[in-house]
Length: 523
Image 1: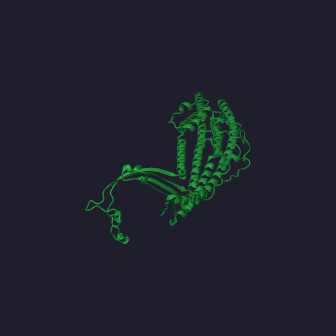
Image 2: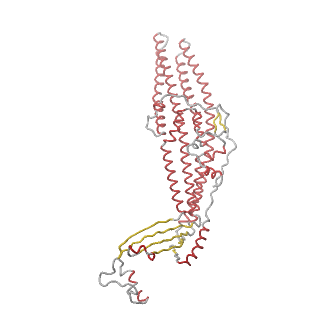
Image 3: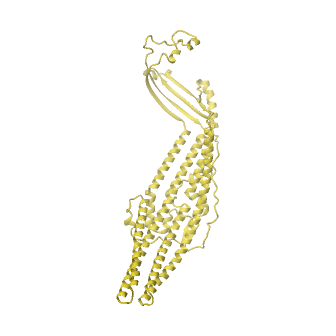
C-alpha cells in the first residue's frame, strides 16, 4: 500500500525542496535497452540474371510518379483518383489518426495532472460512530475511551434525535505528477512514437500497393480489350472461310467436310468472346472499386479499346542502397522493432519504485459565508512511493513477453528485407524474360500471318485441303493472343518492379526533414 507523507510548515518545505530536486535529477535515468537502427547490407549493383533486353533497368533516381513513364493520360488520372478516393487508403489515414491520439495520451503522463473540484452536502454524523470517540465535555482517560466511554468533546443530544444535520460546502484543487525516475513514461512515449511512424509507413505501403494494382489492372484491361479485337478479327476471317468453302461446295470444288470444319472453327472462335467480355467487365469493376465508385462508373471512360501502354527504353529504379530508405514495409518493420525495444524498458521500469508528487488545497466550511475565510483552508502535499513486493510472477512474465516480442520483431525485419530483395530480383528477371518472349512472338505472328495467306491461296487453287487453312488460322490466333499477353506482361512487370522497390508514395505522403534525418542517423 502506498505511503503518503505530508509535510507542513516552513521547516517541512525546506526539507521537501531538496528531496524534490534530487528526484528530478534522478528522473534522467532510463532503464532498458536503447534502440539502434538495424543495418541493411545492400549489394553494390542490381543482380542481372539474363541478357539485357530492349528496355533496361537504370540506376537513375526513380520518379515518384512512376506510372507517368507509360505516357498514358487515362492511367495517370486513375492513379490520382485512387490516391484521393480509395477507401482502404482512407481507412489507413483514420488508423494513423488513432495512433497519433494514442501517442498524445501516452505523452500526457509526462506532465502534471491537475483538477478542480467543488461539492455541497447535507450531512449528519452518527453519535455511535467515530464521534463516539470524542465523547462529551468531561475529561476521560484513554482506556475509558477505548472501552466505550465518551471522552472530551461534543456530546450527543439526549433522546433519539442524536446529532444535528449540517451543511458542508467545499471547493479546491489537487495536482499530481509522477517523477519518471527510471524512464517508465519516457519509454512508453518512445514506443507510442515508433507506433505512429509504423502506422505512417503502413499507409504508405498501402498506397504503393494500390498504385501498382491500379496500373496492373489497367494494363490487364487494355490487354483483354486487345484480345477481344484479335478474336473479332479472327471471327471475321472464320466467317469468310465458311463463305469460301460453301461457295466452293456449290461449285463442286470442295466437300461437305470442309464446310463443317470451317463452321466448327467459327463457332469455336465465337465461344471465346463471352468469357473475354466478362473478364473485361470484371477489370472495369475492379478499377471502379479502386476509385471508390459503383460498378459501371468507368465504362464510358475506359470502354473504348486502347493499346497496352508501351514501356520506355530505360526504367529508372535507383540504387540498391536506397531500398531500405524507400520501401515502406522495411521502414515499418524497423519502427515496429523500435516500439518493441522501448516496451522492454517499460517492463523493466515496472520493477522499480514509482514516485508521485501530489498536493491538494481545499476550502471547507459549515456555512457558505465561511468559504471566504482564510481559516477555512486545508491543504496537504508530499511524495507517494509505491514498490511492487509480490506480483505472482506477473512482472517477470511481462518482461519475458516483451523480450520475445522484440526478438520476433527483429526476425520479421530480417524476413522483410530478404523478401524485398527476392521480389526485386524476380521482377527484374520477369521484366527481361517477358521482353524476350514478346520479341519472339512478334516474329511468330508475322510468320503465321504469311502462313494463313499462303494456305488460303493454295486452298483456292486446289493445291491443299482446308485442314491446313484451319491449322494455320488457329496458330495465328494463338500467337496473336500470346503476343498481347507478353506485351501486357512487360508493362505489368514494370508496375510490379516499382511495387518491389517501394516507389510511389513520396509525393502524396512526403517525409519531414526531422524524421528523415532521424532514420538516416541516430534513433
